[in-house]
Amino acid sequence: MNDSVVAEIVKNQRKLEGKRWLIVLMFLIIASVSFLFDIATGPAMTDTLPVGEVVNVLLGKPETDEMNRLIVMDLRLPIAVMALVVGAALGVGGAEIQTLLNNPMASPYTLGLAAAAGLGASVVIAFGGFGLPETIAVPIGAFVMTMLASGILFLFASARRFNSAMLVLVGIALLFLFQSILSLIQFIAAPEISQQILFWLFGSLNKATWETVIVTAVCVLLLSRDVWKLTALRLGEERAVGLGINLQLLRLKTLVLVAVMTATAISFVGVIGFIGLVAPHVARILLGEDQRFFLPGAMLTGAAFLSVASVLSKVIIPGALFPVGIVTAFVGVPFFFWIVLSKR
Image (cartoon, rainbow, N blue to C red; front, top):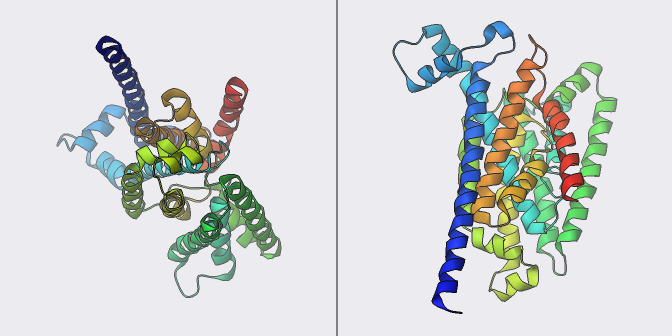
């Protein structure tokens, strides 16, 4: 192969990488625009602020109205930021689980982590917070139960002769188990308790905290250190081992990071489905399997998805705040059908 052919190959590769970075930039722009509209919109049409006023408040310009500044900074900004962060966490979690298990149906939801969080929260709501305030006890219960489910997955993943397909089956079994126990708790609980559990399961961005941002950022940075290993894993487990990758260590490390990240997000906002399933598919279709582009693409797609859902939750029924978990399901199901039918 002469130098001109090599130069042409390198040129084409650089051109392809440039296109992929432009797509990542497009996702970033969509997420940013949705972020501004999320801050601008309120439960009622009369609560809507001009986008220009929102930008002025965020930039700290002195001519902004004091009431608008309080609304933006104290009420709406935390919710809008949480929509981006939680969506990014679920998108990255789904992307890495699909990569790790080589299964397009894998996600934090299908592995039972979301159902475990719902069960942990419902136990606290139904039986009390064991001396802690409910606002603190519910997220703790959801987080502990999610990490317990993750621990069961870790045990199976660390076993010899246990492949990725079997791990998905274990996750599905845990999903049905936790949902069955959750249904039992709702059945025996008082009607008002059952209603509280149901409302938590719908998902809400109002109870997230800034700690979610920190945990998500740290986990994403740690996952980004293994981008080439995860990319090599897509060539097949045998080839990855041949390249010197410790597959068992990589699987456990990725599962731990994804579990901590998704458990932190879900424990505060409730069960929000389809983002961890749909966002990686969109990123994979547009960006391919190279983790340098796939990881930020899935992260930004998930962030944009949940941010748009947050906007829709406030405008679907003017004057009421629609549960964001229901919105993601309504948007995600037809979108997922489209992916299945178009890409088979």
